[in-house]
Length: 259
Image 1 (tube, rainbow, N blue to C red):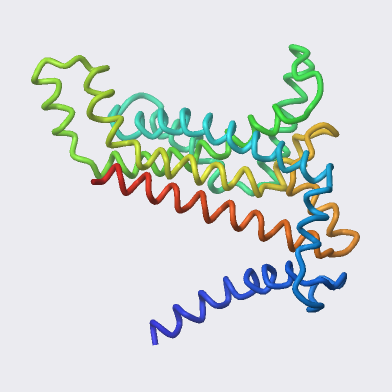
Image 2 (cartoon, rainbow, N blue to C red; image 1 turned 90 degrees about the vertical axis):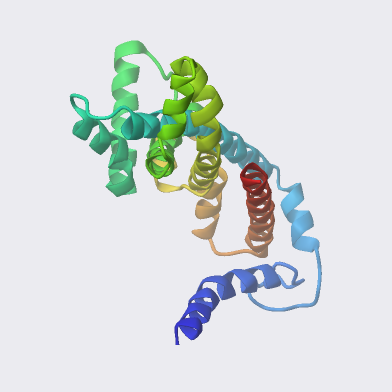
């Protein structure tokens, strides 16, 4: 029964995705009607300049946000796992993990208010766009990275670091040669998680972006208001392919670190 339930759950999750990919190769103008095999909608997608620009912007924002989230979240997870008790630790941990439990509407609205206040006080940002979206996504992604890194370090024996210190290594050398390599798989996983969250976010980006910061999910969402088109099906196939390649690459990288 457990195996049947598992297969039913997988079918419920993946059957709509596979159907979407199937109809992306249909020649029909109706999104979910088979009209013969064709690649015409991939050609239409490639010729859509607005969608190409939005996709390139989304990739740049997601990569930048994931990298910043990995650095900040990695440092946060290390502090929570290795620094031990310190004044304000509970408050620090609660604030670092707040994006995990706050609704995205609340997060987006609070970040919008923060950018508006910052603009009034310092004049920056002059306008909301890709930079504000990147910072907003890095703020939310940092919490996820911190959880992954903290879990990794908590389950890791600190005796290895203590041994390096006993053998004469400085704290920085011990961190660079012992702790950081052991943290690397969790940081890679956190980067991928933050990248994925940034790439498909609509709610937070809608609050903190402007005319020059329309990401691909925002553009697709606005297109869906006018009705689904086969072009969106083709876009879904491209995104699915990129995601599969990224997951495969991450799996190979993590496997090499474990060998």
